[in-house]
Length: 138
Image (cartoon, rainbow, N blue to C red; front, side):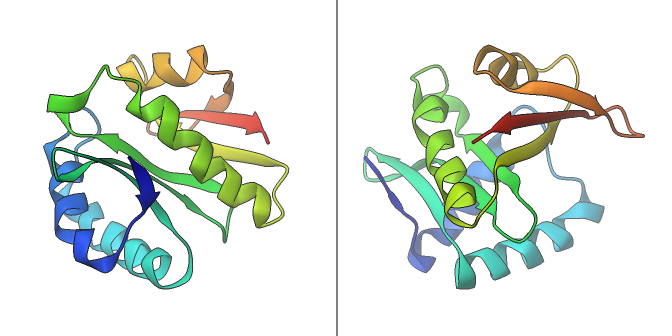
């Protein structure tokens, strides 16, 4: 089931984010991620996939800058189409905020990179750390 997240689900969203096999949070970036998540919980929306009585994945867009802030699925639930179901919700939030395109970054050579390419995202460059920058028209 897809629904908007509530603050009550934040601990499980945190668990899912820290359980992923790719793109783990570094200690240096955790505080920034928490700060951005605070703002999004107060002003925007996290979309969650709930199964077996708990959040198993989430997507979220940052309507301040047109980015997909996160798309993460618990490793036990990967390969079930959850990401393909959640990502459009985050993109819809960006479209509603007035953006004509969404952007995101992900690590090169990852399953995430392959996922975005297969789902119509176009590479527009690389960041200094090698992260792939993707863009998709909304």
